Amino acid sequence: MPLLDVSVRVRPALAGFEPYDPAFSPCEVNLSANENTHSLPAEVTEALREAMVTTPLNRYPDPLANELRDELAAWHGVARNAVMVGNGGDELLFNLLFSFGGPGRSLAVCPPCFEEYKNFAKMCETEVVEVWRCEDDYSIDADALIEAARGAAMVMITSPNNPTGDLVDPVLVRRLLDETDALVLLDEAYVEFAPEGASLVPWVAANPRLMILRTLSKAFALAGLRCGYLIAAPEVIDVLAAIRQIYSEDVLAQSVAMAAVRAREALRPVVSDIVAERARLSAKLSELPGVTQWPSEANFLLVRVPDAATVRARLRDEFSVLVRDFSYAPGLSDCLRISVGTHEENDRLLAALAAILK
Ligand code: PMP
Image (cartoon, rainbow, N blue to C red; front, side):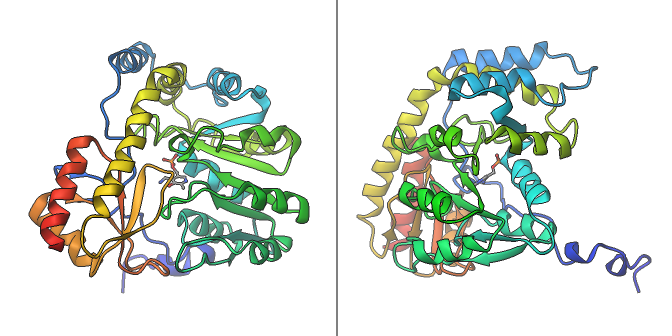
């Protein structure tokens, strides 16, 4: 008998959750979490360092991070009241379900996709309706999603999708807005790695039910900082502003994010290099025996290899290369997700995979 049996005390909707496990092991090459592993231009690192060392820590943050909202708003051509900042995109996803989900409401998702949508929905007592992607090319059955969305409070779709790498067809987003009454969250965490014009941020002004999630964790190389943002109708932003943890975006995150967003032009070559490396990695992977892969517009590739769990363990234990194993997940049997690293990191991975798969 435990000293304290919390199972009878914990809120029933929260029973059974486990702490998040990123399945991290220390490795020389870590390509497991879709981080940006490139070194940044000196002017950017200098601007970030300056922001860190000059920010006083004795005062509370601006709860709404208004200076940062203004910078993001100017970048995206919207007003401050169409932007909300969060402690990573994760906080905003949770707050969306906290605000617009709840008992008697449902969330429609298209798995395999980012698993936190479902976890946060369950925590917020929101039913999850899953419209599974097609097993071979991971395309979405548009009619099935529209049908599910007709009864849902919200739809969450990912573009490019994690872990399958594909962009959502804008025609599907148009249909969701025209043919259903659901709030539509388009998660563009990886959109900076997709071709110019892939983002649907310009649609928000004319479509008040469309909400776009972005993050500084990927292209901006700030996964450790915890800063994401949502672009949405002012009415949605007002709700999020009212229910958020008041100081969740700390002063360092606000000032460093501000410096990074201001330096966004200088980061372009880094993103271009990752995109070029993605093409090179993909071409080299296609020369290896037994590898199936899917086209990706993000900073990772989904590959299927024989006995993926063993391949992942051997990469880690014999070659000190860490990738993400999805072989346990429905629809992703024998699949590994490989983040695109630097030229050298990708070469290490390719050599290791060649040795394992030969
Ligand atoms: N959306 C997707 C699709 C993601 O893959 C991630 C991170 N892995 C997030 C949102 C959240 O990112 P963050 O909280 O670091 O901003």
